[in-house]
Image (cartoon, rainbow, N blue to C red; front, side, top):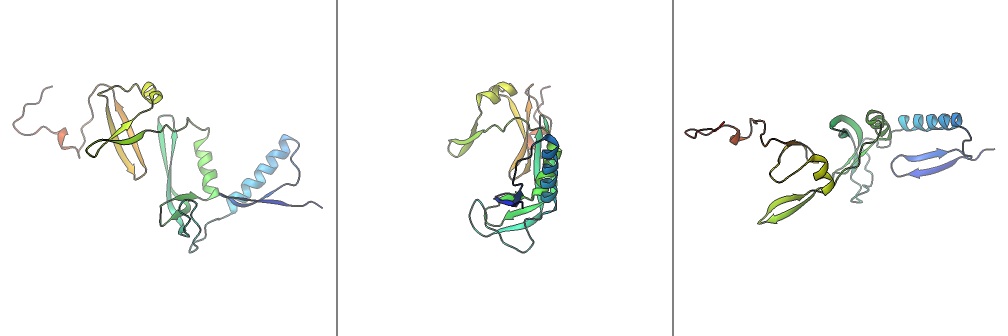
Length: 187
């Protein structure tokens, strides 16, 4: 009689494993398809139930159907909205359902380069500045005086554009994009 082995995965919950390892590629594919089917069918976060948050430890993690995720593939950013999962009412941590993670994996395809960390610091009298890694400076050809345009997408994401010629496209929100009265504009 085969004994079922189960493990408790922090992201996916209880997962049953085979008692022996698959021997061939076909057997691996069948096992992968069975696990994928179980993950797609399972709903981890039930509406009305509070779960402990992995970040703050409070039992404020609640089901949510309005989560969003951005997928970066080279120079393209894809925003996927209306994802199912859970959000902590206290600290804002978001966790996706396993089926949504599989969906994002299918959309993303092959993994892209890892994220670069740009540190924000205070440079004087409350003014914020950033320190860019040398690798990013080299890849993006950043030099002093380069203009960067930042488009706000959400509280945790933004789109950054580099202007190489020192010009920028006029913005309707930017009062400096229109000349003030009485001041000649050099072209």
